[in-house]
Image 1 (cartoon, rainbow, N blue to C red):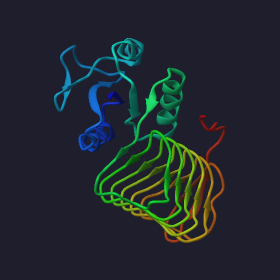
Image 2: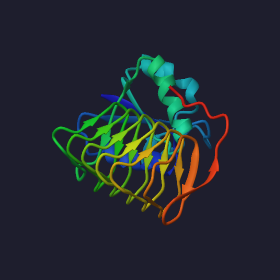
Image 3: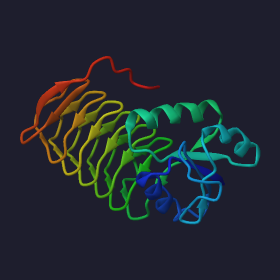
Amino acid sequence: MKVLIIGAGGHARVVYEVLRYDKNVEVVAFVDNVTRGADEEIMGVPMVGDHSVIPALIKDGVKGAIVGIGDNSIRAGYFKQLKTMGVELIKAIHPTAHIAYNARIEEGCMVVAGATIATSARVGRNVIVNTGAIIEHEDVLGDHVHIAPGVVLAGRVRVGEETFIGAGSIVKENITIGSNVTVGAGSIVLSDIPDNAVALGVPAKIIDIKENHVVNG
């Protein structure tokens, strides 16, 4: 299948590296709003301009896409746009990731090298489970979540839509973290966190509440 990667930054390059292991996928282009010239390439794959080119690429045989952008809100917006275009939102799963046979991973997700998704875990649409992260038994991740490198979620944790959990953080079992939450790197979460909060520290404490955020569909 011919596919596009949306984005051209560091995360998009990791997506491409993971997709190189999938023999059923051919990455034909990166699509990004910032290009330096018509002949620009990333690792030998052309950059083809901004998102206005996507309909023409679909007519030329592109069937799938994945959003290679780390920011949750932006990634969610592009995911929704691609869905309206009828493109298949593919998964990028590194071969060294350990995924339980009864875990469920929805469309558009990215699971990077060394990550673990344990028994009965549920991973929503367009989620990033980054390098070496551990999603333990019966965890549930909402759509458009980003779990950064080295994060450990103990069993039966719930994470709401568009939440970001920073690198190296640990969340104890049976915790609920709301939607649009930011957990700072290296935090240890020992109690529930409400929607729209910013929390960090050991143990994690709420330091701010975001205002007027609307979670993307």
